[in-house]
Length: 552
Image (cartoon, rainbow, N blue to C red; front, side, top):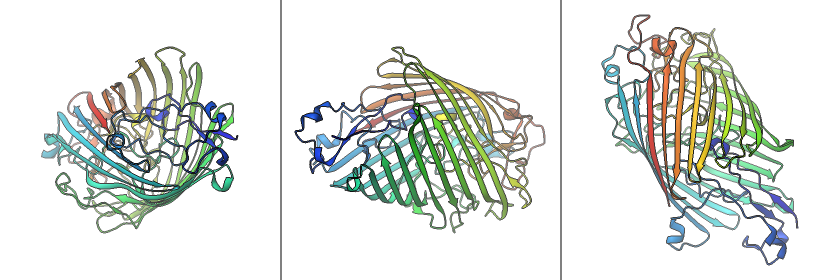
């Protein structure tokens, strides 16, 4: 009997979990036609799978991997069993409610009345509801996911005033997050390789999730429409290749169509057929003494459409990562390097980008940790992130070289803290060491303490949005020095059971000289009507969130 053990779930470390996921795949001579084990006595020696807890997101984690099987624990309350549905049909329903509060936000000195109203505290309630349906017919799967993301309870500071207008990062009402057809064979033509083809609208996580991810904390998701091919040699390597077009969340909030009433207006998302996102990633397991590696190359080519102006980004982003998975009583590490080259356009006015610049940027993540062999399962690790910025953010001429690293469609919350109405940091123009301590004092209680010191990689560049315009995510620039501040955080998660979970977090930013003195930028490369050297009002920033996740 030939036995393959599935690789450890790669996303578990990003969710702060150290639980591994194991499953088994037998040769065809030990598996019946309906994928159930036969009466072979050797089958009793197969280890029982263990499952990781799903993330706090309205992402239906019952979506079992067509090649690796189910990775997450089954909800104790679930519609499939309650409705006595057939085995070929999967149904899941999830809902997340999150309250966020932000005081003394990093907004700089601005002269507009809208910005003055936004000083002080902001709050918002984010609601995410997710319905998942899948039909399996032998090796064929047809699946769809219906997602509703919206907010309520925001005050004047979080409505249509800067710096936190309601936009497509928080609201995408009543739309299809996924809709695809796939074919998968766990033992393709008796070769021992697993092969999967998937076509349609889909979401996916690749590698470390720093460049391509389905966001967990954010209220809306990244999705793409196209083709994806996956080949896996179990416990050895896995290769993903894809050719897609990004999906535009509508109504679209951007520099051309600002201040849309996103809350009460439903408009079907559609594909951005003028843009292409493609690439491939090879993940290799155990290349040397439990060291694993990722090698990848992504390509993004944007084009403008009538309702979706872009910066015409045309990037190649190669990268490589080496890492060891956390294990009790052992050291682990992670080292990832990402390059980026191509060209990009910036706008001379608050309309379409029209001046092309050469784009050259890079980023790195370093991490070294130790998991103590203790009942509380503590893991302490040091981390460091660097992402380049531009030497002069306000230079929109064709002679300038754009050096601001673009995180593409990646997630940042597991490295830099929550997005939502906080979103203080991302993988762009940042120079930041830090540490984290995670531990589990009780079986169902997970705690974490984090701290990061943040400088700008380039003090001449802006902070707070990779476009550095006031169109969607106002940025800050022209501050004193490069020290943004010191961020400390405390997080806790309680799992009542596999269907109901709670999480809370508190983040405090001790603002540095740059955060205290910078001004908000506008699309033309200037600041919004304030004299040079005027200090930002308010004190240090405080952010708090509490959320619940209910899944059936």
